[in-house]
Amino acid sequence: MEAVKLNTTTQTQQQANTSLYKAIWRWHFYAGIIFAPFLIILSITGSIYLFKPQIEQVLYHDYYYVNPQGDRVSASQQIEEVKNLYPHAVVTKYRPGENATRTSEVGILSDNKSLTIFMNPYTGKKVGELNNEDRIMNKIEEFHGELMASTLGDRIVELAACWTIVLIITGLYLWYPKKKNGLSGVFIPRFTKGKQILRRDLHAVPAVWITAGMFFLVMTGLPWSGFWGSHFQTIATNAGAGYPPSIWGGNSPTSTVKTKDIAEVPWAAENLDVPASKIQGFIPLSIDEVMKIAKREGIHPSYTISIPQDQTGVYTLSAYPPKAEDEVTLHVDQYTGAVLADYRFENYGLVGKIVALGITLHKGTQFGFINQLISLLICLGIMFVAISGCYLWWKRKPEQNLGAPKAPSIKNMKVFLLILIALGILFPLVGLSLIAVWIIDWIIIQRIPFLKRFLNA
Image 1: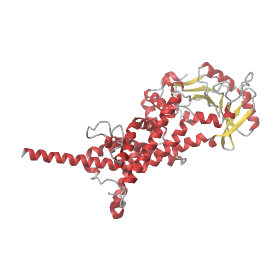
Image 2: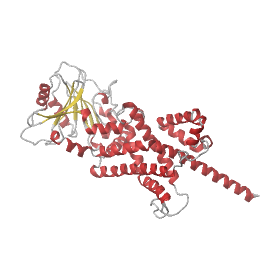
Image 3: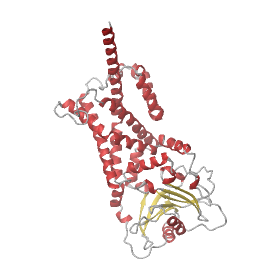
Image 4: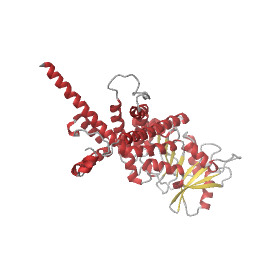
């Protein structure tokens, strides 16, 4: 009697394990089919963007570089030259250049266009101009971040990134070896077990090798996203009780203007409140005097100066260099030259430091070429895994339906349901998409026999 009861318990457990396996396989299958194209797009554009410094050096070599010849013309004179060339433009930025061979840059708004004017700092003459919207790498970045579809594209990319986490979790479960058969089929493809097994291994094994890198790229990319990223940024800022008192040259301001509204700054400084210059009847500082302040404060030479556009505005100096440790954001009173806020990497909270390092690693700048190469290999791996997964499905797909495994109702699988709910809370767009899938399944798929049969629902 005990043997019969034990056998029944074993069979029940095996059926539960089989049902769970099929359920996870089904979710992995659909997530892969839907989001594989987006993963391929993100990997291709990300691979290109990794090499932005090298690509732009080639594309814009004549704009970026000059031969040093004598003394430099002051920044004020360069800006005056730009004003003469573009009398109706508004000067918004000035970038002195990080070394002796680099041109200086003057940012202007002209006819509702954002232009960068490249100046020879030794002659004070214009070298060339670029419309910032037409820069090739800006287009690649826009395509990578929002598919060139504005807010809708941003949400699609974020949704694809979040569902990649689901793909990773479900994929690891499906891959995890149930029997100890050595490394074959686990870390090494089986080349002598037939085409079907080889196709499976050429998808699963490379996926395992790049799992950590893929997870890292997703998690370091999400802080830039418009929905999850903005909320995460707000939570991180509030959890740190704002910014440490040491960064303020006086009382910390209460402001509705954030630094990201007036300048391009590091992620951790985007929500930094912008202080106001105290109007005391002084003449505003010249750009040359602001550069002296930058030198005195030891800012990384790649910094950019955002020029105040009204009487209460401040000069904002931001350095967004290759290494996170060199990031700086300074707000300077436009009349007195007082440093009103000095926010650097060492002032960041733990989350800010992790995100800052994650971003520079994501972009491939933190450790130079070796960083670019490792990230490129991960991107190529993601492309291969996405394509091999689609090929695996195509070769297995029966003619009469999509080929998704039949699985019991998710309501009967409490642990897996709880995991999905947790992911839906952690990544709200995943939660919303799960609700949308459930509604579509309940209202449409379950009521149309052809769809129910085709999707094996």
